[in-house]
Length: 93
Image 1: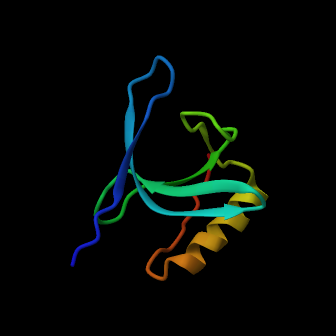
Image 2: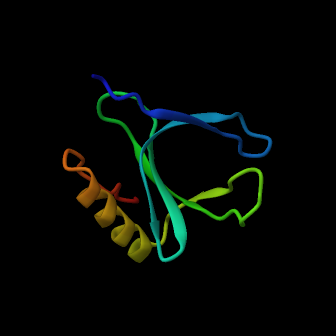
Image 3: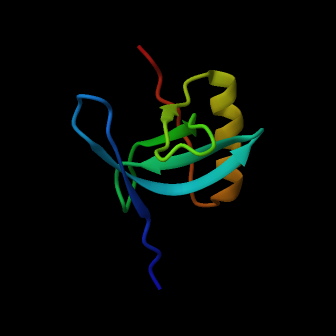
């Protein structure tokens, strides 16, 4: 049976909304993280997002994890959770 990924839509203020598919989620050190991709099937860009919303807020607020140490730690957890996923960090020019 094929496993469908959850699709979520992000609204970034005045910018157009963007759809992502949730590959996995976890909680580390009291913070929720989600691993999302821009394609439902096949290889695609992936981002790790951190939930900054407070308890009781009706909408979640996510930011892209950009701190190198935090990114390395959280991507390691997701890599352990997902056997068939390989993380490759983009090199900034």
